[in-house]
Length: 93
Image (cartoon, rainbow, N blue to C red; front, top):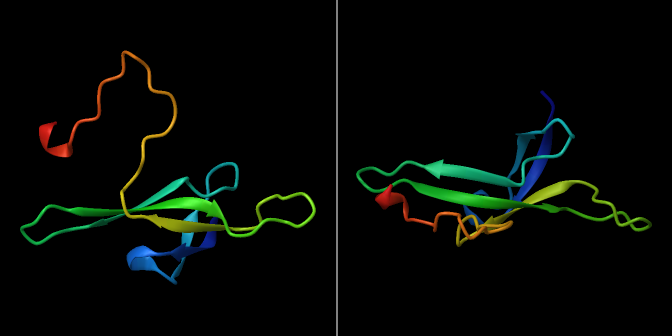
């Protein structure tokens, strides 16, 4: 599989450039999660969201990618159907 050197902005990985596996379309995943095990404490998960690093001047197409830290965690996106279950905390599952 192909990988691409991707920069991380904010959070515990601030300033690092790590190889991230690309999908079948040649684009990195929309979210990158970093689980941190806790010693006797609950596990912490850091979430990064994909953004274009820069845009080409003529067409405005993305030229490279970067991950930006999401301190609140991953936000629910997309449609919310009336029959969808409400979000539950991880401890209630």
